[in-house]
Length: 332
Ligand code: SAM
Ligand code: SF4
Ligand code: FES
Picture 1 (cartoon, helix red, strand yellow):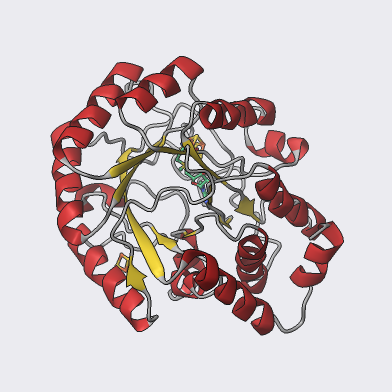
Picture 2 (spheres, protein in one colour):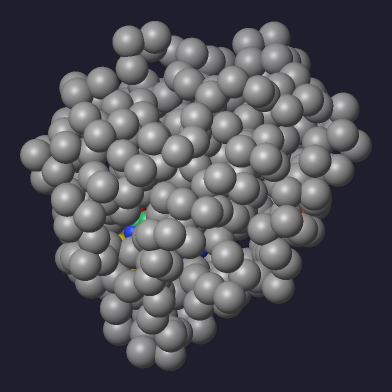
């Protein structure tokens, strides 16, 4: 598909045939298994100030926390019982977590559980990524957020797009499975730009494509910005991504449930094959509010484990019992 094909699909008045085609494509290429990757939001402390994010450093209304290592490891052990096969360790860009500290954590999780490990802790240097890879990190998740350098600059006072893309390239070269993606509907984004972001994911040949709608957080510079697109555009974006990346893992990300309580279910029926249940211990959840309406804040990790199984059963899907590694490049 080229840009104008994508624009035509984004403008389709009746999206149902597109959704059905994407669901069929997912079934043919990825099967009915949904991989469960439990996410632990282990620190909400961030030195950066991204204009959209509820835990940005300038939002002093956030109560800071760091989850002690033993609690993270206990949670990982519970994940195995819940049937999850990967853990995603996510945080703000928190300098407390040095290369050595996370190396130690990765090694301990690897020594005590069979879980695959994804890290999502922002931009770091090559030596750090290498140390984590050698310790057992399987995957890394770092969204490019937008492929437009100007829009990127307008929402990231501390970063530049070139550096972020360089991080993704470094990770790919060292054989880490790479996940990236974008925010749908950042302020000033056009439908044309959205088409470009979709194409950019394919260009990056990602192992995993994670996208989600931008949702304005009240304590951020983007508080008064509404998303320029409708939910149909969000879902069409998932469907198109599936059609042009048949073998990529695509998660039903949490933000879809914030715009519609059935959002993640719909995404699973429109191309997605991964679910990332919240596994952050309950006491911390309310302090990791990236955007308003984030689901699962007052539920426990046990509740989410039960909920996700019910959802998948009702959708006629099965739970993947292997690690769900990249199908695109067996070397990674
Ligand atoms: N600090 C790391 C980073 O930025 O890559 C990982 C944590 S960050 C909170 C994870 C993701 O949250 C970001 O990639 C961003 O797309 C998403 N996010 C932050 N604020 C959001 C908002 N207001 N609406 C939707 N998604 C948001
Ligand atoms: Fe920090 Fe990530 Fe939020 Fe940016 S998106 S402020 S890097 S936690
Ligand atoms: Fe958390 Fe449904 S996934 S309560």
